[in-house]
Image (tube, rainbow over all chains, first blue to last red; front, top):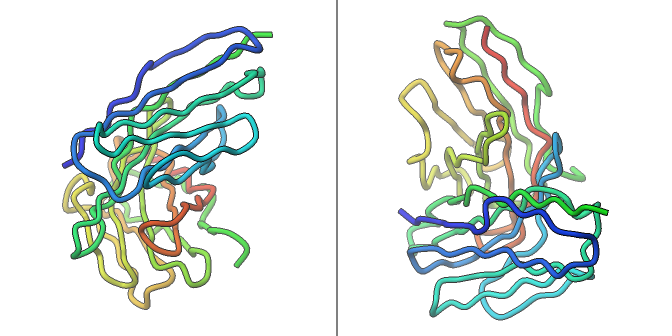
Length: 112
Length: 113
C-alpha cells in the first residue's frame, strides 16, 4: 500500500509570502491530486497531475515521478488561502486502480 | 446531475441500528470513491468502484461496512450494527476515470448515539 507523507503538517505565514507544501509517496502512481478543504467545508480538487507542472492562478503544482515527490506552491499568499491542503494518490495496477491514499494534510494559516 | 449528490445530508442513529448512505455520482463517471473524515482528522479511504466492480475495499474498517454499485451509477454504503466510533462525515467522490479530476459530494454527517 502506498504511504503518503506531507510536510509541513502546520504552516503559519504572513500575507504575501510564497508557500510550498510537499508530498512524498512510496509506490509509483498513476495520478496525484491536490485537494483543498476550508474549515467546516467540503473538499475541492485543485489539481490532478500525472507528470510535469500545472498552474492555476496563484497556485502551481509540480510532480517528479522519478523522485516520487510533488509540491504545491502558492504565490502572493492571502488569508483566504487558509485551509487544509491534502495530497492524494492513485495507483493503477492494470486490474483497476487501487483506490485513493490520502496524506494527513497540511494546515495552512495566512495571517494578514 | 450537476455534481456529486449524497443523501441524507445528516443522519442520527442509535447504536446497533443499520444505516444506508447514498452517493449519486456525476452522470457517466466511471470511478467512485467512498471515504470518511472524523472531526478534525484527515480523510480516510474506504472503498473504490470502477463501474459496478468494487476494485478495492481495503479501507473498509471491518465486516460491518459494505458498499455496492449494482448498475455502475448510484452507490450505497451500508453500516450494520452501528457503533459510536462510526460517527464521521462520509463522503464520496467520482471521476470520469481513474486518471481524471475528482469531484466531491457534500457528504453525510453520521452521528451514532
